[in-house]
Image (cartoon, rainbow, N blue to C red; front, side, top):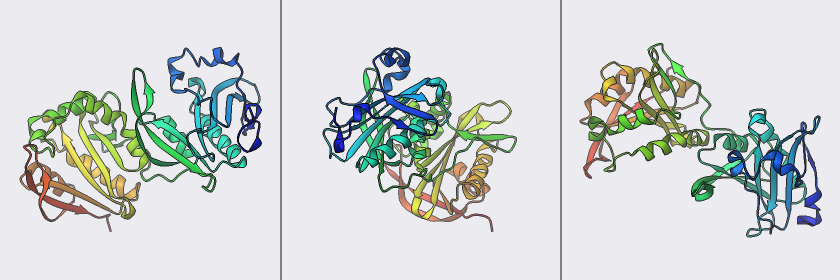
Length: 353
């Protein structure tokens, strides 16, 4: 097939420092398990009606061993200068930077052929794909509803794009990675699969519902989505979702969120909640102190804010014990669980010194 800009895409090869991307042969399919492997179903390949199509097997340059597959094609329904990219790396070969090397190599090749824009889609729960996109210089551009197959249903996808004029450098992220924070009594870490039951218990507790800002009750499905998409929000730099864990037992006692409210000014807001059996032990205050230190000294936050219903004495005590200063009352700022509105006490915290 003669592809875009007169290049014979179907027979092209792309070399990177460690890998060779060569034309995908029929005999490769069995080894890659493209048709049968549940793992590879997310690698669906492009529309073969594309004007330009580069379908490759990803192999190690030294050994010739197959490590995955990748497609690059001109989207037949879009401008001729826009290409789509789809990459799949075998499980055993992941965490070695192969995905980023493939994406970067294909982008460089496409731009040399005159392509102006390359885009890829990543599932909202597909953290590795999102990290590859950012590491390869792609910028997050939005989210598409029901854009990817997910078994018998469809799932949302994050759109990443890179232009020929963009620097071939990793995209700077708004929130740094975090393993865990601890003071020996409380540990704060990103929420992860396995936390769902504890988080749902926290949100359905009568005291939590009393101060909820929506009339809708959380469901098990809501919590699954909340956890599954936590890393996507973190990588986007929009929100860090933490679990509050008792250090001695590892039990998830509640949650804490840091949301970027004014990213351009590095201003963020904190919110928190604890399961009923864990209240009254000072765990939330400890967790807030750990996160505020991380926010100022690791994440580069310039100002933290916090709000609580004026009658929510417990939440306000946590704010004050964690060092937040009262800054006034915003009248009828908060919606309530009964459909009304209430005043909100506002607090602020600045970096030490």
